[in-house]
Image 1 (cartoon, rainbow, N blue to C red):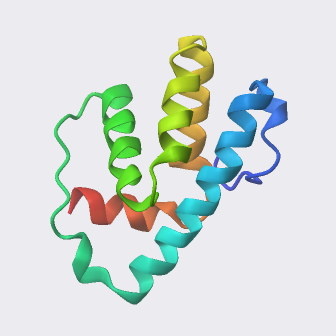
Image 2: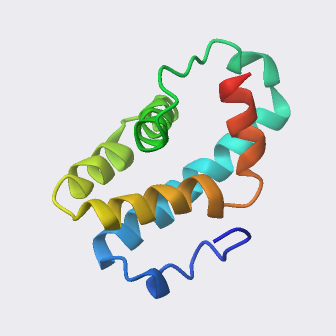
Length: 112
């Protein structure tokens, strides 16, 4: 899924709900990328608590809620995921952490 088109998610058999939420999360991530480029020092206080792959991704997703002003988008995403199969949730999380362009830089800042 590397270098995937962020709006070409339907081929991964994600439900329409998850697809729509990922589009909104993509927008947040783009804003984060821009923020990172303009002010790197604000990200030194992040700390990752787990190296377990699935929990690691969930933890990072929760950290992103800090940048969702009313936390509605990511909270809703987590709520939707709680009603979906683990497979669909993993596909969605993997897309967030491997499919979005330039997101590696953000991940590096998180685990720095």
